Amino acid sequence: MPVLTQYEPIQVTIQTDEVKNIPCGTKGGVMIYFDKIEVVNRLRKDYVYDTILNYGVTYDKTWIYDKIHHEINQFCSAHTLQDVYIDKFDQIDENMKEALQKDCTIYAPGIEIINVRVTKPTIPVVIARNYEQMEEERTKVLIAMERQKVVEKEAETQMKMAVTEAEKDALVSKIRMEQIIMEKESTKMQQIIENEMYLNREKSLADSSFYRVKKEAEANELMLTPEYLELKFIEAIANNTKMFFGDKVPNMVFDQKLLGNFLREM
Image (tube, rainbow, N blue to C red):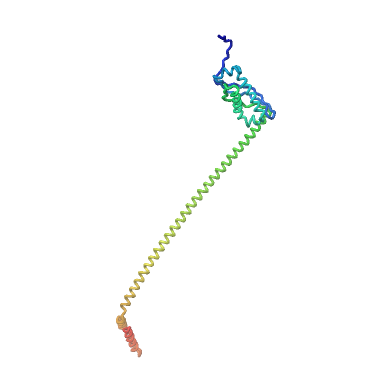
């Protein structure tokens, strides 16, 4: 039976390894430092024996600590300071995780890389000041742009309000104009009706007057017979109280008799 001479505790739960003070040079030759990079990882239980057999109890030094230094330097040497510090900084976490897990899967499959957290690198003071100034200027520009947007939005709002007010006024004017037109049309229609009523009334009066005159004429025509006219003539002579003297008087009477005879012959 073998005698136990030494043992090492091996953690198989999730653990976080902190890799500190990582120097690297950018593509442009600027030296920067990552103060701390955290690697969340786990050693699977069924790979403990093989991993310890191949890489010892300090397996994480080979596949995490040393590997982080290597991958960070690889990334920095392929990118400019602007990329590392600003433009592509948000991609470093995912790039480190993929690079670590890729080699672990091939050479140490028992190591599972869960997450990588990279802190902002430290850059030279002069360059940092330049970035601060750039950020200040960018902030000023952004503030100016936002202020301009606010002014444009206010102008747009005022324009919309003016358009709405103008449309409302136009609508009110249109309604008033339609109302005036309807009133005029109503007045016109009323005048037409009154004119028609007046014309019908006058026509009725004219027809009635014509009918009365016509009937009177027909009655007179039936009444004015020669005998009636002679009678009326004689009554008129008899009612005349004036006395005429002279040799012409018989002629007048004679003429009247002739008139009576003429009327009888009609």
